[in-house]
Length: 200
Image 1 (cartoon, rainbow, N blue to C red):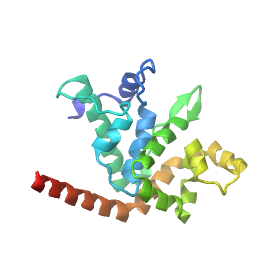
Image 2 (cartoon, helix red, strand yellow):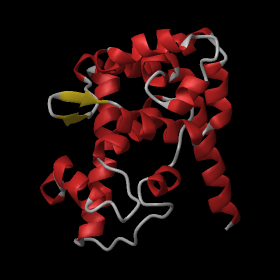
Image 3 (cartoon, one colour):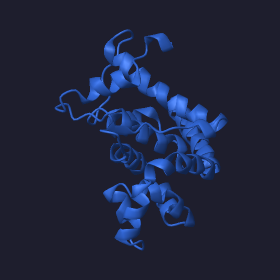
Image 4 (cartoon, rainbow, N blue to C red):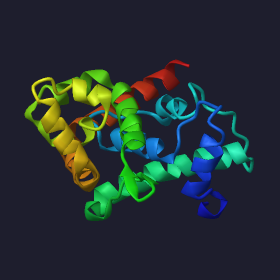
Protein backbone atom coordinates (compact mmCIF):
# COMPACT_ATOMS: atom_id res chain seq x y z
CA UNK A 1 0.00 0.00 0.00
CA UNK A 2 2.81 2.40 0.84
CA UNK A 3 3.81 2.70 -2.84
CA UNK A 4 0.49 4.44 -3.54
CA UNK A 5 0.99 7.03 -0.82
CA UNK A 6 2.20 10.60 -1.20
CA UNK A 7 5.27 11.76 0.68
CA UNK A 8 4.53 14.01 3.64
CA UNK A 9 6.11 16.94 1.80
CA UNK A 10 3.74 16.30 -1.10
CA UNK A 11 0.78 16.26 1.29
CA UNK A 12 1.86 19.62 2.65
CA UNK A 13 2.19 21.11 -0.82
CA UNK A 14 -1.15 19.72 -2.00
CA UNK A 15 -3.09 20.91 1.03
CA UNK A 16 -1.50 24.28 1.65
CA UNK A 17 -1.06 25.23 -2.00
CA UNK A 18 -1.83 28.91 -2.38
CA UNK A 19 -3.55 29.02 1.01
CA UNK A 20 -7.00 29.58 -0.47
CA UNK A 21 -8.42 26.16 0.35
CA UNK A 22 -8.59 26.62 4.09
CA UNK A 23 -6.75 23.34 4.62
CA UNK A 24 -4.01 22.77 7.18
CA UNK A 25 -0.48 21.63 6.36
CA UNK A 26 1.42 18.52 7.40
CA UNK A 27 2.79 20.01 10.63
CA UNK A 28 -0.70 20.84 11.91
CA UNK A 29 -1.92 17.43 10.74
CA UNK A 30 0.88 15.83 12.73
CA UNK A 31 -0.10 17.76 15.85
CA UNK A 32 -3.72 16.70 15.40
CA UNK A 33 -2.63 13.09 14.98
CA UNK A 34 -0.50 13.30 18.13
CA UNK A 35 -3.46 14.51 20.21
CA UNK A 36 -5.75 11.82 18.79
CA UNK A 37 -3.26 8.98 19.20
CA UNK A 38 -1.81 9.95 22.59
CA UNK A 39 -4.85 11.58 24.19
CA UNK A 40 -7.36 10.22 26.71
CA UNK A 41 -10.18 9.25 24.33
CA UNK A 42 -10.59 7.28 21.14
CA UNK A 43 -11.59 9.40 18.14
CA UNK A 44 -12.77 7.88 14.85
CA UNK A 45 -11.04 9.16 11.69
CA UNK A 46 -14.38 10.43 10.38
CA UNK A 47 -14.41 12.83 13.33
CA UNK A 48 -10.92 14.27 13.04
CA UNK A 49 -10.29 14.18 9.29
CA UNK A 50 -12.73 17.08 8.65
CA UNK A 51 -10.45 19.30 10.76
CA UNK A 52 -7.90 18.94 7.98
CA UNK A 53 -10.23 19.49 5.03
CA UNK A 54 -12.04 22.66 6.07
CA UNK A 55 -14.88 20.84 7.82
CA UNK A 56 -15.45 17.96 5.43
CA UNK A 57 -13.86 14.74 4.23
CA UNK A 58 -13.26 14.67 0.48
CA UNK A 59 -15.02 12.03 -1.60
CA UNK A 60 -12.44 9.34 -2.23
CA UNK A 61 -12.35 6.80 -5.04
CA UNK A 62 -9.51 4.24 -4.93
CA UNK A 63 -6.62 5.33 -7.12
CA UNK A 64 -7.55 9.01 -7.20
CA UNK A 65 -5.37 11.77 -5.68
CA UNK A 66 -7.94 12.42 -2.94
CA UNK A 67 -7.89 8.77 -1.93
CA UNK A 68 -4.09 8.74 -1.86
CA UNK A 69 -4.13 11.93 0.20
CA UNK A 70 -6.47 10.56 2.86
CA UNK A 71 -4.63 7.23 2.94
CA UNK A 72 -1.32 9.04 3.48
CA UNK A 73 -2.77 10.96 6.43
CA UNK A 74 -4.21 7.76 7.93
CA UNK A 75 -0.82 6.15 7.42
CA UNK A 76 0.77 8.87 9.55
CA UNK A 77 -1.83 8.19 12.25
CA UNK A 78 -0.99 4.48 12.23
CA UNK A 79 2.73 5.23 12.09
CA UNK A 80 2.57 7.47 15.16
CA UNK A 81 0.47 4.89 17.02
CA UNK A 82 3.01 2.17 16.25
CA UNK A 83 5.99 4.33 17.21
CA UNK A 84 4.50 5.46 20.52
CA UNK A 85 3.46 1.90 21.35
CA UNK A 86 6.63 0.02 20.41
CA UNK A 87 9.55 2.44 20.11
CA UNK A 88 8.58 5.74 21.75
CA UNK A 89 12.18 6.90 21.99
CA UNK A 90 12.19 7.33 18.20
CA UNK A 91 9.08 9.53 17.99
CA UNK A 92 9.67 12.88 16.29
CA UNK A 93 6.99 15.51 15.64
CA UNK A 94 6.90 17.18 12.23
CA UNK A 95 7.77 20.83 12.77
CA UNK A 96 8.06 23.49 10.11
CA UNK A 97 11.36 25.30 9.58
CA UNK A 98 11.82 28.93 8.59
CA UNK A 99 15.33 30.15 7.77
CA UNK A 100 16.86 27.81 10.31
CA UNK A 101 14.23 28.46 12.98
CA UNK A 102 12.07 25.60 14.21
CA UNK A 103 8.40 26.62 13.98
CA UNK A 104 6.18 24.83 16.48
CA UNK A 105 3.08 27.00 16.17
CA UNK A 106 1.42 25.06 13.33
CA UNK A 107 1.95 21.75 15.13
CA UNK A 108 0.33 23.05 18.31
CA UNK A 109 -2.64 24.41 16.35
CA UNK A 110 -3.29 20.88 15.13
CA UNK A 111 -2.77 19.47 18.61
CA UNK A 112 -5.34 21.83 20.10
CA UNK A 113 -7.81 20.86 17.35
CA UNK A 114 -7.37 17.29 18.55
CA UNK A 115 -7.95 18.34 22.14
CA UNK A 116 -11.22 19.96 21.06
CA UNK A 117 -12.54 16.69 19.67
CA UNK A 118 -12.91 15.27 23.20
CA UNK A 119 -13.19 18.27 25.50
CA UNK A 120 -14.50 16.46 28.59
CA UNK A 121 -11.69 13.92 29.09
CA UNK A 122 -9.12 16.54 28.15
CA UNK A 123 -10.53 18.93 30.76
CA UNK A 124 -9.80 16.31 33.41
CA UNK A 125 -6.18 16.29 32.29
CA UNK A 126 -5.96 20.08 32.29
CA UNK A 127 -7.28 20.14 35.85
CA UNK A 128 -4.79 17.52 37.02
CA UNK A 129 -1.12 17.73 37.94
CA UNK A 130 -0.26 16.29 34.53
CA UNK A 131 -1.08 19.64 32.95
CA UNK A 132 2.40 20.87 33.89
CA UNK A 133 3.88 18.10 31.72
CA UNK A 134 1.99 19.57 28.75
CA UNK A 135 3.46 23.05 29.33
CA UNK A 136 5.84 22.94 26.32
CA UNK A 137 2.85 22.39 24.02
CA UNK A 138 0.45 24.73 25.80
CA UNK A 139 2.99 27.56 26.01
CA UNK A 140 3.22 27.83 22.22
CA UNK A 141 -0.50 28.12 21.53
CA UNK A 142 -2.71 31.07 22.63
CA UNK A 143 -5.55 28.74 23.62
CA UNK A 144 -3.10 26.53 25.47
CA UNK A 145 -1.66 29.49 27.34
CA UNK A 146 -5.17 30.36 28.53
CA UNK A 147 -5.30 26.91 30.11
CA UNK A 148 -2.39 27.84 32.35
CA UNK A 149 -3.69 31.00 34.10
CA UNK A 150 -1.54 30.34 37.15
CA UNK A 151 1.70 30.54 35.14
CA UNK A 152 3.17 33.95 34.37
CA UNK A 153 3.62 35.19 30.81
CA UNK A 154 7.36 35.38 31.40
CA UNK A 155 7.50 31.74 32.49
CA UNK A 156 5.36 30.65 29.54
CA UNK A 157 7.70 32.51 27.20
CA UNK A 158 10.68 30.79 28.81
CA UNK A 159 9.08 27.36 28.31
CA UNK A 160 8.09 28.24 24.74
CA UNK A 161 11.67 29.14 23.81
CA UNK A 162 12.79 25.51 24.15
CA UNK A 163 9.46 23.79 23.43
CA UNK A 164 10.71 22.21 20.21
CA UNK A 165 13.24 20.20 22.21
CA UNK A 166 10.64 18.94 24.70
CA UNK A 167 7.47 18.21 22.72
CA UNK A 168 8.46 14.69 21.58
CA UNK A 169 8.95 13.62 25.20
CA UNK A 170 5.69 15.32 26.19
CA UNK A 171 3.72 13.34 23.58
CA UNK A 172 5.36 10.10 24.72
CA UNK A 173 4.51 10.85 28.36
CA UNK A 174 0.94 11.73 27.39
CA UNK A 175 0.54 8.47 25.47
CA UNK A 176 1.50 6.40 28.50
CA UNK A 177 -0.42 8.58 30.96
CA UNK A 178 -3.66 8.17 29.00
CA UNK A 179 -3.27 4.49 28.06
CA UNK A 180 -5.99 3.07 30.35
CA UNK A 181 -8.55 5.80 29.63
CA UNK A 182 -7.90 5.61 25.89
CA UNK A 183 -8.27 1.82 25.87
CA UNK A 184 -11.54 2.00 27.81
CA UNK A 185 -12.82 4.69 25.44
CA UNK A 186 -11.97 2.55 22.42
CA UNK A 187 -13.80 -0.48 23.85
CA UNK A 188 -16.86 1.66 24.56
CA UNK A 189 -16.81 3.09 21.03
CA UNK A 190 -16.70 -0.42 19.55
CA UNK A 191 -19.60 -1.54 21.73
CA UNK A 192 -21.68 1.42 20.60
CA UNK A 193 -20.80 0.78 16.96
CA UNK A 194 -21.84 -2.85 17.38
CA UNK A 195 -25.18 -1.83 18.84
CA UNK A 196 -25.82 0.55 15.94
CA UNK A 197 -25.07 -2.19 13.42
CA UNK A 198 -27.46 -4.61 15.13
CA UNK A 199 -30.20 -1.97 15.18
CA UNK A 200 -29.73 -1.04 11.52
